[in-house]
Image (tube, rainbow, N blue to C red; front, top):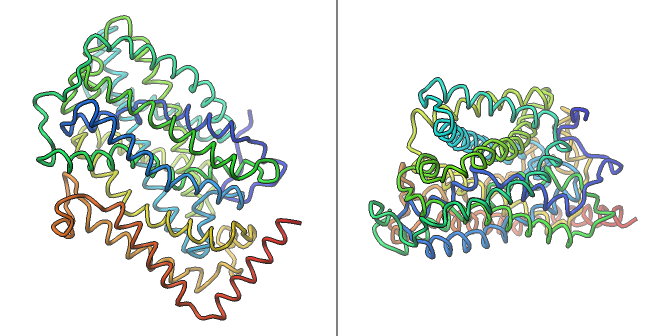
Length: 479
């Protein structure tokens, strides 16, 4: 299979051969991994029992999918990734906001997947073959996982799609075996040494809904376009693509996260997940657990690393996608070592997802509002102006930036960061929300309202021009 040469340039129609079923496969297969499973442990570590954990994860996922899934339709129209597509709202240079947000999201989740997967690999190898568990072993295992991940990411979308189809079947079988393996030790109550993290039930439940449930779909706000750009809108109706996105996100996130809750309760995992998971495993499940840690981590981290390469390629147009992927792989591996040797797992994960959700949500809301305003019509050539190191086009706005969208995102992100509550940082707006973390709602609502207000306040001549351009594009698409 040849290495994919295409970066964030427009995918030609003859190459757009993927289907909505492929989209489900990649969203399901790539997420059946420990990097997603571990989020099911978070509610248990917060002090929630089985049903509160399950309801918080499901509720957060439902809201997150409702916000995130429609973004898949943007790249279906533009035939490029979502950060580049956001240039229609933010400007061809302003789309760097989306590239940076996507880069940070993918970087964190790649590091988390390699970190958790590597720790479980070392634990199982220690029980099976007596492998030492010191710094040298961790260094070697992390390096091997990272190297395998780089191979998949460099080869690109087609290889990752094939791998996801295999993982969708193989990992499902391994998780079903896991349900049997941990069933004798299952309990419905959180470990006794884990009181409610925020002192009472409902604030802790809401934190779980955001940190464990909502964060999953939000992680895909810049990733969905990496896959839907290969689906042709001439062959597949947008409704089919939207349904496939929702199905893939629901199944791909709920199955592994609920498995994480199940195993965390069975293993009495309070302050750590990987260690208790391995310790509680019956001997016969160690090999399947090792396979799940290895294959699942490579599949998920490979997809995240692929997206990181695209985002860096979008930031630095002179860099090839392959070179950009190698650079971000080195950075992600560095974060893995920080995660293992310097950070507390629960605090690092919770803080990361809440902060990135606060700054990512308003970007997603603004991008989707602009998509609706344009009726899903785009000038694909004008979106590529920055990549070609040129100027002009209908998305040039002011020096390549749309001040209205950029200002709206900035205000929304600042309000979201001011309302966030993490183990490492608490925003100044928390007293006004009764101590509850409403950063997701606040950032998306404020960013979206500001953007609508500023757009409505635009001079009539600009609104008329934009409407005329959109009508021309729709007529071109229809023809």
